Length: 332
Image (tube, rainbow, N blue to C red; front, side, top):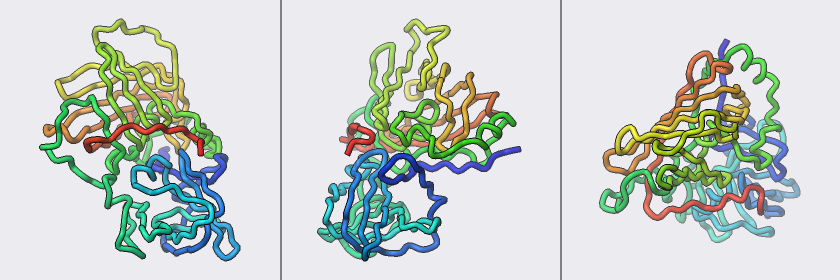
């Protein structure tokens, strides 16, 4: 038996972190508009949430993380401001909307979904029209080489969409059947472990050369992975941790291969697929010839959970001048 699983690069939640609303909970057949006054704002990671008073009804509006809003150039919203929004409404008969379009008080329109089109203004920012879009850096601007730089959060670097038909073992099917989405530790600002931390990370990353060790810094949850390179003493029985124990080697001058074991994290993805006790993760980070694109391939081997290895891929497009931003989960 195989499991049909849906994983999303982004997920949305209300002010409290006790519930999780996937896109499956929204009616995407229509995109209605609302206008009202802001009565509450949670301008934070992992997601921005707004309460909008619309003719006496309190609508809960859900959007991207605060870091994403900053990169899109969206100013922090304030209580008392009047805004107009459009998006998908909850399919569960509750006043809740996932934002696609946002009209700011100054007349600027923000596109918050890659399929969104301007509705009210010619002054437009957001996904698809800013540095967040599918921009390729001009080769003449590329003054650095190699992977040791910041690879920004772009549409191409969204979390991997794993195969929709995951080859789960009977044991994994049983564990998955008991999964409660509200217990996802990430909703309580607990950083995810491998492979989820890297494969489904939709934010910027940075490689830092420390000689026999490479640091892989992740903007999401401010996590840092340590990759032990050849030349360093490699532990035979490393302590199990959520991010595991990673060893790396250069396959050639532009391809880094990383093997990670000793992973204590128990979730394969945010959909609730579990991990076993002997998971092995193999990753390949390879540069394009023009040094602008960083390709990422991952293979997860876990005989307790999968009847065969599971693979995925994504890539980053480099844009000069980007830096990692502090995540500060849950702080408003």
